Image (cartoon, rainbow over all chains, first blue to last red; front, side, top):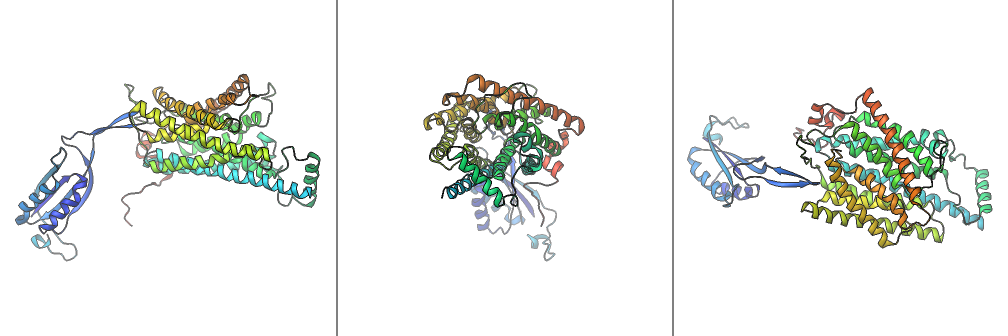
Length: 112
Length: 422
């Protein structure tokens, strides 16, 4: 089982969600985050004082999937979140040691 | 028949004071929203608490002693006719006085309505201070200052100006200030300036190398709403200062006051917006809001006599001045999160002298002496009170408290709670 974490541009969330639905992914968790990579921030102005906004708003998606679904998931997210412009984001794949469904107590692949 | 007309006049002029007083009371909501919008979310509850509390304190202190000091209205309003006091004999007395005076004069009106109209001005002057000292002052130190400002400092200078009393028996002022550019706005700004000097800037606002850091406000919709509320309330502020409605000449004056007040605000906003665009390259909403208020302050000393065009230009000049003043104060490290000292002080001074553009009876010397008297009195007494408060209880919250927000340290309550589990 894998945990796929993706940082994407906020306006791409709906596209990614749809794409994941299409390949059968049943649940995701979404967080509003701020961050920067090689996409630099921008300068804002407040009452004459300039300030650099380094941290840009992004959306972090976390989805737990069975190993068999990994490649499709990565492809779905990559295609849906891509704009071709700097700041599209990154995907991190980590191993999941255990999953438990709280309501039923199911574990492992059945809990995905 | 004449008696009935006198009764009507009494009622109309009393009613006018009451409605205008209610409009000025509404300005308290305007200040509260404007300030709440321009501070950070972690400091919002505290500034709202300051605003509601200072209004209540102003009303109470002015009732206790302020009105007596300013207008000899009696401690605890002993001089105001209560409901029980307005018996048939009292009414007959008023009618007799009216019949003697005829229709030319000020006429009779309820003393209670006079107090009501005056007290809301005290609150306005005091609320100017709350924005300038925002985000780092101890709440109770501020409220302590409010007690002295509304019970003593403001009533004293009010007595020398609007009540014509001599200044400590030394000299009398020949100073013209219709609704209080100096008496209310400059006074508030002087107290605010004194406070900010004693308090110091917010942590992190001015870097050692001279860079000015931006600390953006958390809620610009509230700030905008607050400005519009102030704009509306100002019709009562300036309009009510005509002090009378019942009569052709005076009603026309009131109408012109409303018109000019509005025109000045519009002029101020446009001017400030353009200046900000030219200076910073973008349309700065907060400067536009300050510009509208600056226009209102600028016309407040003489909203009746100018032509509508002149009123617009006076307001526009205020809008230009305020932007430069805000930038300048930041340069000399006077940290004013909402621009109160600039809007009410710098432009208040402009308003005092703008009177000369349309009022033939005002003199430069009279305006100058009046302005200096108000400023020096309020600034010096305020500095003394601020230093006293600093010695007694401290005026500034600790660095830690400032970092986590005064909502928590002073009020124990967040304005925008997150992570609520219920």
